[in-house]
Amino acid sequence: MRSTGFRLVATIVAIALGFFVADFFCFHGSNIVLDPRNWFELAQVLMVLAAVVVTMKLVERRIRQDKSRIGGFIATSATAVCSLAANASLFVPLTFASVWFMYLASATDRPLMDQTLAAFDAAIGFDWRAFLSFTNKQPLVAETLVFAYHALGRQLPLLILLLAFARRPRLTEFTALLAVSSALTATLMLFVPAAGAYAYFQPGPIEFSNFTARAGMWHFTELMKLRSGEPFHLLVTRAEGLVTFPSFHTALGILVVYALRDYRWLFWPVACLNGIMIISTLPEGGHHLIDVIAGTIVGLVSILAVKFIAGYQPRLAAANAQLTSDVSAP
Image (cartoon, rainbow, N blue to C red):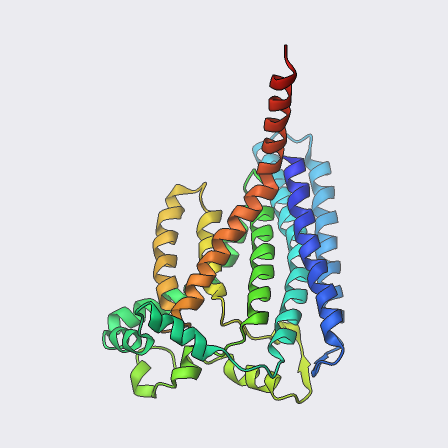
């Protein structure tokens, strides 16, 4: 178990460091100016998290001999909070570095590829405008899609709290899934700059009247500023989600469902909700269908990669050892 946790932590750290290296490499010559407050806020958060970890470790040691019910509850809570803070200390630098990279990747003058993405959708028979019209004409459907799309943000803190109390290192596994999926997403968005279906098709307000007023366009002003070449002052805590291809909403929805596989009472309701959420990424999130397909692939590949890192390598080693033993046996 400890070996599994170590490999997962090593993966998260390696990806975060990879992002930082890429950031510093791409930073020179970029129009992005990193606000000095970023470093102060990052250091402040990490110091607080370190203090929480130390405090919870002291509580665990102090309460270790207490066999009462209250003592057990305090010890369990301290372990969970310690796990939460320790994983947050991995997640925060990862998020900082990945957001910085995604802004650097978006600050390009390369042509947007929405026309190519829309052409791919058309080639497989999907009409984005027709789908938008169909869902918008049914207020209850549109309302459900809007709710599902924005519910993902509410799921994450609840999931993280739940996983913090899990006996297995599920929270570290989920953090590793976020790290791997972020690396895949950042790589793809670097090569496929896009603004989204709303920016490309430019539907009139009446065509999405039952969706939110800024559906699929909340990032557009930020994106255009980055692409203008003018100096852009980045404060990571106020960053917008800039990824169009692939759909990170889709990937994240899949990862959340996978993380709940040990909780059958939650797995199926959340799976249904996030299935609707994935559909909502088209009219509410403003994604092309190919974005969603790519996001699905990112989610599934991330799961396979983390499973391999966490467990398959020892099993393969054991299988090879057994095979060697069988071959050498008389």
